[in-house]
Image (cartoon, rainbow, N blue to C red):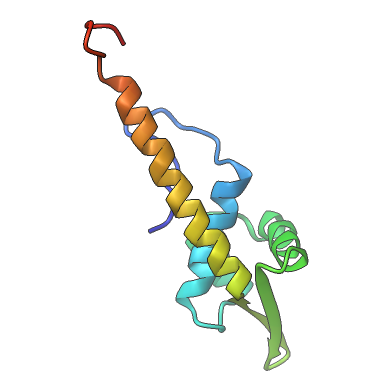
Amino acid sequence: MIPERAPNDGAARRREATDLYATVLEVVKRYHGAARITRVSYGAGMPVDRLRLLMDRLLALGLLRSEDVEGRPAFDITARGQEFLDTYWKMRGFVEGLERTNDRPDVRGRR
């Protein structure tokens, strides 16, 4: 699953850096070491020039690795990148649970 671009109410929201990292890592993970920048761009819904900067950041953080295949870079997720994704999805579940709890009135009928 790739992070949503907008919440259920239809209002567009800006994706946070962690959302973008998770999106890119999920797309790269799908290609099992053969993710090319153009495919990741389409999968993440980002222009290539902006994606290159983000990919450079993920490489520097050790969340991605790059290997030349037929003279062009192909990307793969690292163990650290997978650990980031596992933590990201766990935290996102907690936050969504808290948001659902905040939407329900408490026992005194207040929100």
